[in-house]
Length: 97
Image (cartoon, rainbow, N blue to C red; front, side):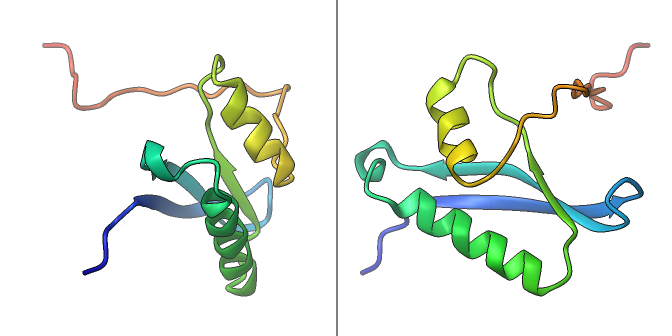
C-alpha cells in the first residue's frame, strides 16, 4: 500500500505584471520523517516544469519570515524575495458586524 508523505496545493490566477497566467503555491507539506531526502526539490522542479510547459508566466509563494530553512530551500530553486512588495491579506471569512 502506498503511503502519502505530503502534498502541494497550487492556485491559479492572472498577472498583469507578468503578462499572463500565474500560479501561487498555497501550501507545500512533507512529513517530517521524509524531509531532507530531496523529495521537496523533486516536487518543486516537477511543478516548475509542468507549469512552464502549460504557459504559466510566474510562480509565487510566501514563506514565514522566520523560516530561514524554507527561504534557503526556495532560493536554491531560483525563487527571489520581492523586497519592493509586501504581501497583504484580508480574511473575508472574519467579517466585522
